[in-house]
Image (tube, rainbow, N blue to C red):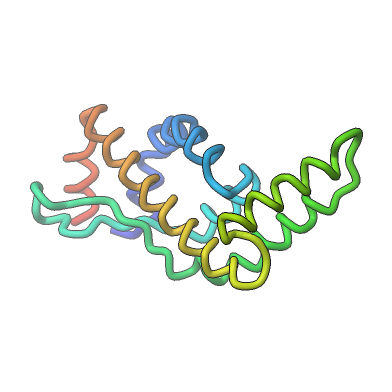
Amino acid sequence: MSESDWTDAIVGERMAVDQQFAAEVRDSPFTNQEWGLIMTAAEFDIVDADDPENARIVPDTSKVAGIMPEVEKMEGAMGGAPGGAGGDDDGGMFSSVKESLGLGGGDGGSDRTEDAEELLERYAEMLQAHLAEKGRWEQVRIAYQE
């Protein structure tokens, strides 16, 4: 089964997980817009689908590094955008925090790619947990194999 077939079949569950995952995104180094762009580059697979005990949803992050320059452009555009009172101070504060965490400029690109991949892994785990909670995981796992 192709990735789009099984993920299209769970679009409602994905929307619910997206809402639940919003807190993870807020606590991440990415804005909602950046996360949305990262999600367009991610695909999800089920590994060990034929093994009910070990089957799990995993992100295919092979395209994420390719989208990161666009994510960085979004960050630059948002940080450099003219704002109202305090707009520049906010950008400066976030820049300082990101730099202290090793997330700003230069070498930060590879760190941000790793951050994106880790966030996608957490999203996949939450999606699988949600499907299990709703009683749909087994159905999705079997459908994936077909």
